[in-house]
Each structure stands twice: as C-alpha cells, then as structure tokens.
Image (cartoon, rainbow, N blue to C red; front, top):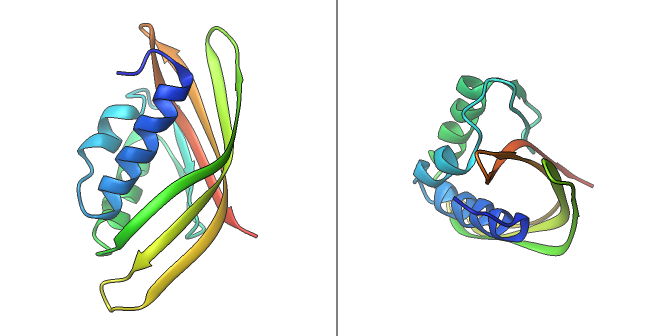
Length: 128
C-alpha cells in the first residue's frame, strides 16, 4: 500500500484503469475496508458503505470499456491523517458497443491514513 499521498493517487488511478477494463482487484485493495466510505460516481448514484461502493465498481467494470483514465491538473491537500486530491479525469476510449468515449470529468478523491498507509475513503466525479 502507498505511504505517500501522491503514490496513493497514482495507485488509485492505476486501479481505476484496470477496473474499467474488467479487473476490480486493485480497487478493492486501495479503498478502505471501513464501512464509512462513499462514492458519488459519474452515473449519478450515491453509494455509502463498502458493500455498496464495491458493487458500483463491479458494475462499472462490467461495462466493457477499452481506453484510459488520466488525472490532469492534480492538486493535493494533506494533513497527518487525511488528504485529498482534486483533478480533471480525462477519459478516452471505446465502449463495448464501439462508441468513442471522450469525457473530461472533475474529480475529488479523499484519502485517510490507516495503519501508516493511504486508503481511499471517498471519491466524487461529475461532468461539467
């Protein structure tokens, strides 16, 4: 698990890219296992608790996306126990139906230090 906030953000976006292509193992590893986590995804759902958040990512991973998600314009704020990242998530690729996808999404990811490692506790993304 990442010990710096920047490394945690890198691990989060690497896991998101794997999740979009069907592999949720990295998502499950980087997110906190506590039940106070939340996810407000670009599809409009508000999910609270580990089971609901992981179910969101399982649904997203089954969408058959082929492409990449890149975090641009990253800005970090950090304390000893909490930190967050705000950025532009730039998605480029193809849906499983062959439609081109190019979306720029504002995103905020909140991390908490647990046992000396940064874990995701909240992620919010929306189109603008």
